Length: 54
Image 1 (tube, rainbow, N blue to C red):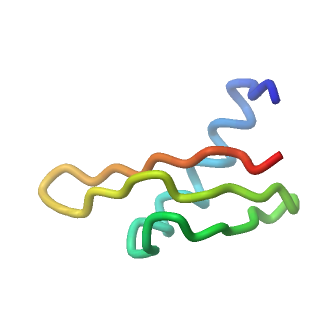
Image 2: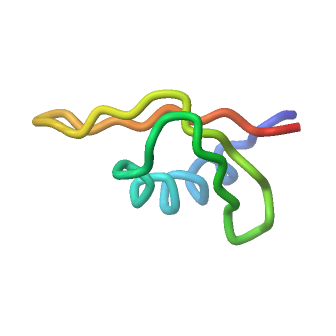
């Protein structure tokens, strides 16, 4: 699956709200693409790693 810069911008807008979700949880974006939470860090530096589910 190839992501364009525009895809990444749209994904970022949704993923930033997923930082409270547990690792392993699968979520859908507004365009119905499914992603799995790989890793999440909610401290001074916040980060969420996701992977598309194909």
